[in-house]
Length: 124
Image (cartoon, rainbow, N blue to C red; front, side, top):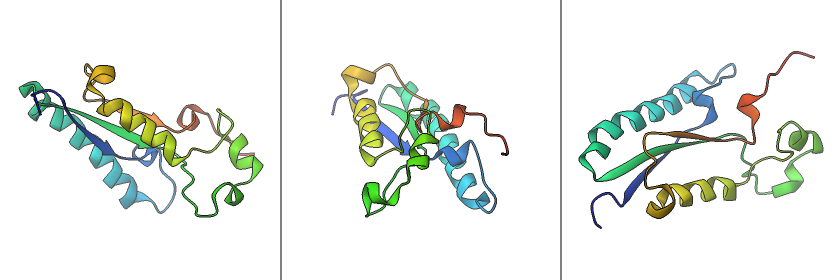
């Protein structure tokens, strides 16, 4: 493969940005992937060989029951009106892997969560 046409896509999580009780180890590991992403940029990208980015999925429904596992309120909780799907994450990865569409993008973290991390949540 010619120099610069390669792409590393680290899969992290929105837990790197937000946490819940009893998720410290998971959150720390996902934040570590974000750190790895930006350190790889300096080590690899500036050598002109590889672009490095991270995808941070939010709530992605991977339940084998599919849509039946979700409630209407689960969808409404997301600003876009639905829970994410594996296809949402795949589409971002396909975009980032495509040199023609994302060849000038490196060292970035892409949150794919339907807008949840931008939402203010207050106790009811």
